[in-house]
Amino acid sequence: MVRRDANAGRKKEDPAEAGSAEASNEESAAPAEGAREPPAAEAAEESAAATPAPADAAGSTPQPPAADSSEPPAADQSEILEEVMKFAEQGQFDRATALLEAQLRRKPDDAELQHNLGVLLTEQCYWAEAEEMFTKAFDSQRKSGKLSFATMFGLGTVLTEQGETLKLMQGEALFRDCLQMAIEKEERGVTETYRAFVSLSENLQHQKRWSEAAEAWKPTVELASRMFGETSDKAIAHKASLARAEKLAKYQKAMRIALWGLTLATPVVLAWAWRRAGLGYPWDFLLGTSSAENATSADLPAYDGDGLGTPSY
Image 1 (cartoon, rainbow, N blue to C red):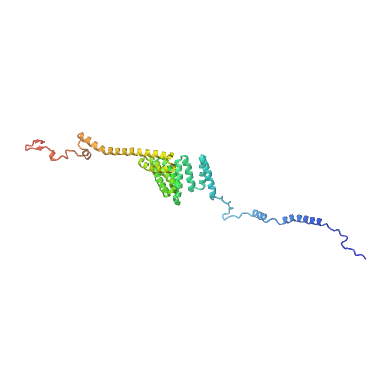
Image 2 (cartoon, one colour; image 1 turned 180 degrees about the horizontal axis):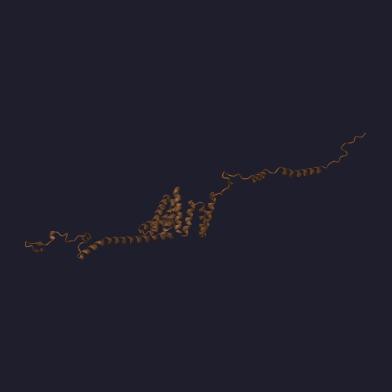
């Protein structure tokens, strides 16, 4: 008796075909699962879009956020200043000025920007506008307690260039302050000391104070000879300025002596001429008196007993 296999009549499945079938079943199942459960981010966006914005207390909808008005980072300003320097070196002062003015509109109290704009305006000989910028920078630095030699020097320069008496005196005071500041630095301030002496000397020349200008030119010549050499163009030019100031100082002194002498001699000469003309003394005329009223008995004629007078000489 032969036992028959129960699975003998079944067809055996190929392992490769079974694997492909399982893969196709998984691919077809994936989209179905995606359709049933959308991603969490998309669901949140759809929910937010469908939900109306809540009204505020006044019943109006919220306004969009304001634009960021924060100041630009320092790197941006440094890049702008580098670009300004490039334009200035190329002689394109208009473009450099426009860049600084635009930056100042964003940072109106920036002393560095004010100073640099003052320098550009000075290069273009806009003295009044440069004075305004340097003054603003100087005031800002004074409030912070950090005065800058460059700002003080620039302000003194534009004041001197305008040539008005009051501005010349203000420029002189600034140059003297610059000189004091530079001298306090000792060896580190030699260049600044030289620049301050030159500008102070020129300022005093503008004021026609030749003796003081000569005194200021003397240390200027000495510094220029040390820094650039006695035969350098600057040293020679300063020596010529010194000689001119000393010469004009002598003429100015002689003129003053002559004017003072003439002033003192004038009333003496007039009094002599007045007396010479027989008009008495000038002070009698000024005081309303006469020589007859001031005469003494010795100056009057003598009288005898008969009432006839006989002058005695």
